[in-house]
View: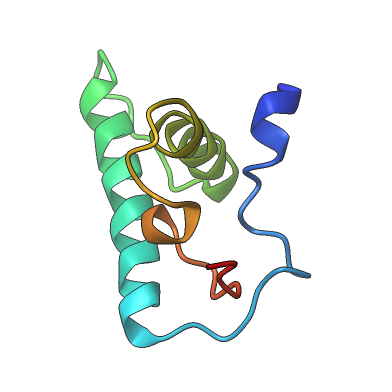
Length: 87
């Protein structure tokens, strides 16, 4: 994985805290949308199985662009982990 994406590895167990229902729903939405997107892009009828490693890699790339490059949202807004805010 490219080093610029490493800082966006959101599933670190050490950083994980208890999440609210709303945060869990946001995580589910992001992961499910990515999985759906990949399945839609598949050029044939081959079944693509759920793979959280693949989903996480794609999620990290999207987060990099939305958070760092385009500055559209904060990391916690895109994919909440229950981390304390620095605001």
